[in-house]
Length: 205
Image: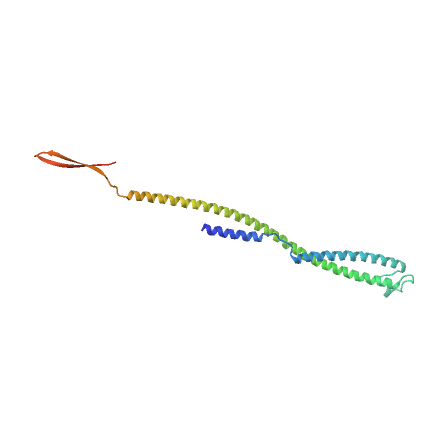
């Protein structure tokens, strides 16, 4: 029974140790992290471009009172202002703004996914710590069972030795005792002129 428990705990310990292996980021997690970094870089570039365009539009509007709806509600700007250049800047600014919003949405989505993965990893780390503690407990149980097994083995050997000694003693006691002695014959006179024949057996020690 102890041998079976010992083997069972060894298998359990190995299983916990396999589960307690170091958690590494998956390929998907690495790719997501790299993609987030690329998007953040592009976002910074777009922010810089947007700032530059805003400054250019501000300068153009100061020269010709140009706004986003200048060409639908007000007359064209003065001839000194390059109309096509202003329109191009406005359109580019709109495009960049749209791209920035898309990038922000993508970054937010990926950030949420990253947070979920980090939370899973954190839970996995906590579980690993619990598994490691369980493995330590298993080691203690195994050590205890091993000690009990050795004690039981010693007790069984002692009982076996005692039983063997008792059996040998009992066998010796059951053996017949053979008395070997020296016989002396005496003829002792008795009353009525008769003689008594006496045999004395003296055991040899």
